[in-house]
Length: 226
Image (cartoon, rainbow, N blue to C red; front, side, top):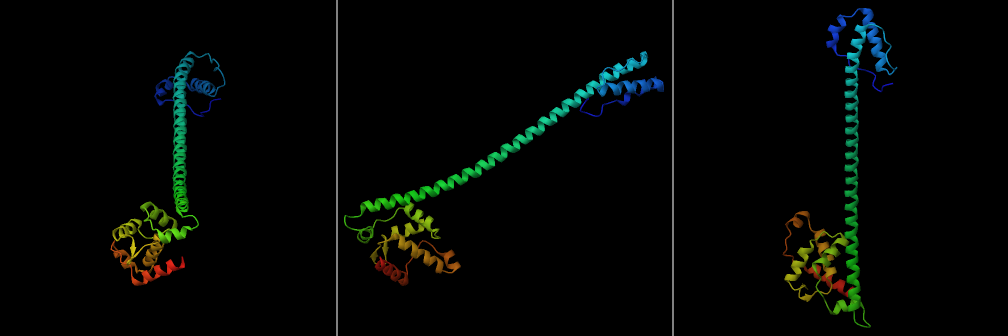
């Protein structure tokens, strides 16, 4: 039996129907219904007029069924294509999210690796029988912008690393009249200064940073504790 439960019967057959009697028309409709419902070949009613009309209408009905099947197939393929595109877009979005997460994890790993490499290099540079802190007290090596950036990243610091570097490059890495001994301590003092400033003052702050007497005293206390 056919999947479609209907068939086309064009109303322009009305003129031919008018030529048939009600009995002939009934036979014709029964023959057509048997044909479209897959009941096999329609029985020959023995009426030439009915057989002629049946032949004409059967051909038209079959063509209508073919068009219906073609349209059904086209719509089915279009629906499958839409579903395929939807899955492809979803897969692309998921891949992009996973890729972004992988990049962030890789950046974190690189930052940690740089810190480890720097620590190893400083340990190698420490003199025999001395400690790394002793080396820091005797020899100060200005940090690179990358080192300050990494340190601020680890601390989630609110200060601007470029501003920090520019300021101390300009004054020769000095705290007041003394040579700086620990730039990390200076970063922490800058953080304290930013936290203690009112919001408008932080917004007006520029690169001309002048350390107060209180900050210099704090730096001296920090050096003694080391």
